[in-house]
Image: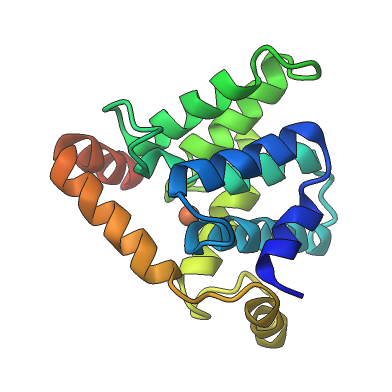
Length: 194
Ligand SMILES: [Fe+2]
């Protein structure tokens, strides 16, 4: 099964499909490296939740996973920290839609904005912490697994290939560093904690 089919298969609700469409619009491609990064983050986060017996709001987790790095792209960037721009983009997308009360929007926003925090985010909600952990597992290339078996991650890579992911993220982060170095410094300084 192709990765595009996986993303399309996962995105079942109207809002999930809208989030996927926005990823494709901002990145200019379907089944691209950033789309697949989001899909893998979601599947890893879902697995981490199951391992820990955590209930999750699946729609919040899927939409946050798909949109979490979108602030790196021109169409979404507003000049603030990219994780903050990503949060605001998601909030604008959903705030008028049914089912998105203040608490769900807060949860979604925190999951996007706090995905680079170095400290545990369970207090902000399971979805927030699970996406943070999933992104670390995803970018650590097997060095951080949070208890997930190596074989499971290998199977995930076959189902949703990693091709191009590191290159795309490195390219977009380098672009953001050139365009808005101060906001990038803010993310990493805040990430280091006080
Ligand atoms: Fe990410």
